[in-house]
Image (cartoon, rainbow, N blue to C red):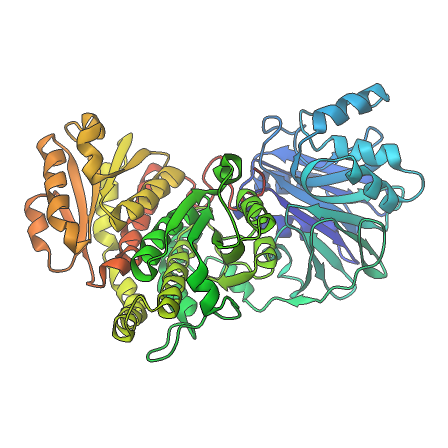
Length: 609
């Protein structure tokens, strides 16, 4: 959530900052602004509520010329979306400007203290305490002032600071909120994510917690908390910037849904090979350590949590290890039982999810081993985990996750097979059968995408409903939860997912004439029971769209519309059955006229608790 961009170089900062912020729109925001030091070294701040286009219009009307500046897209946490609450924030004299991602948890205490010292505040934000703190500590050295200011701050932050006192300098620092430094030719950048700088450079520094950045015309200096220089390797970005463009599709989400066959294939490449052992890249967990695991926690948020539920089914079924799936935001606060025989698998698309990162740190504190499943090389979670399995989904720009989710499923299956192989819970023949079916998933996913016309028609006929229900049993219930979340996220239709066997225990009271029900029936052993559950809702007037495996055409006698996914092993069915649910959400949102890629109130990467 929120986006930061900073620039120091020889080109005009205004267009570079706006371009960088446009590459971060997927993170979610409700206002935008820039602070630029003009050619005379004076501070110019332009900011406004709403989309980045509003800021661009203001800057066209009143251009700011200058080669040093910071920019921000804000997602409101403290104070409603408004011009005055937008970033950048400044001190009273307008000589120090700050952009900030994260939350300053003790801001009220700091605000009261600063007020007693004669400072006045204009906004409702926690961020406004930062420029006042820097001002309070400024004594001729802006770097020293920033360092002293952060010692008083509790919480999470990525901060960029510019000042008229030292107009040729940009200072930044991070703690629990991502920040990178871009290294161009005679120009330098800070940003909260790599896409913001890819039009200018592929060489970046990935900052660790409590590392400071000082940028001036001589280059970049990295410092620790006591001002000692840090040497850090340059990370070279290898993925194509064009991957973050729409490529002819109307929306990023639709493009990313269609990229899933490739993402599935890429995530399996070199890891799943016929007649060879499962490869987990550089994961160093040994066979003995696997056999000693007495419990696995899968910890994640949102869509990644739903991938974890599939992971639980897969690991328990294939490797016979007990698994608990936990919502990361709740995990630390229930005093979980963790020891050296515990394995935690954390799942995060961005690798920066604050709650998941906190759970990881708690597990490490209690001596558990942690495997990270993430899509972002060099992210905080990937650096702090003991082992990492990357999902090669490529950049995912739409806020609602699609291809990151299916690659997380593939990662879960790879881990489950690796454990089964090392524990001997499956025969070589059984492992080879699963691998063979996994390698066919990209081709079968392409076939599923061909059914989108039917799904689009159903969406066009049902988008006006206020409620929809998703039903499934076993793995289908896990997929139903993800389908329901997608619909809520981008169409704003209230939806719920239920384990179909629970219908008679309450939810069936909600079914009335015309109620839309999406039913999943891909699990062979549960098919007949699922058909019975569908009949229960049909009897009460539901309008049912059902998805089943090819060959189960008898379901057409029970439902209003039936579609089929290519036959595969039941344990792998979620990879295919989720695709039509993603398409249903997309086309429903389109029919309602919603902003598909940037749904209201949501952010791509949730970097605060």
